[in-house]
Length: 237
Image 1 (cartoon, rainbow, N blue to C red):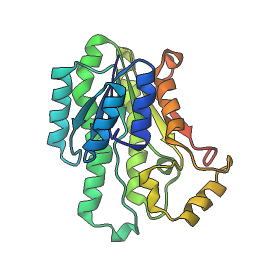
Image 2: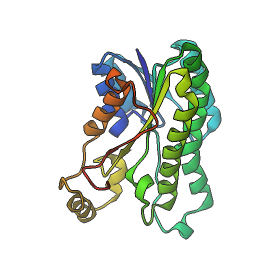
Image 3: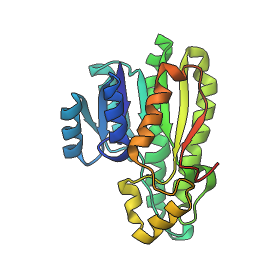
């Protein structure tokens, strides 16, 4: 079994790679800048590293072609790569917003499009898209990020309808506040407040999101598609 995980050098992506490798997958670990981390992870998991900057859609095309030429069509695609910008909506520069949408939405759609023909031909495949609780609720000072993650949810539901007859499942995982580098922009008081607002009274771990990835990729979820699985400690219901 072959799994491609984007944004997998650290955080949720790295945890997902480790969990899937434990389930017997050969993991393709995509990274943007931290090739050193990706190489260490690949060595640990006997996987392979693929580097591409997803703000450049031509690099997405090149990565997809490399995957197909070297490894064939993946059995599992985990669209995890994402960036965030924080600030008042009207203060975010247009170029930063456009970069965010290229990485968070357009690259995900482009990569999926390039890999789908092989899945359709084989009448088999699983696509998992990583969204966010902010895509469900919205977040002040994260309007662009929230919008992009809402789009991930919409993409998941629509594509699941389209490719279900071809035997392909498409689902979405929506993490709450997780202990990742992306959330380290927040100070300790903010993180404690977010923990206090979570019914389970703590911040989530990347490994807990990875468990959801493993479940939705498994045969135990073979009749599940077009769904959003929230991993948020009850932060949003």
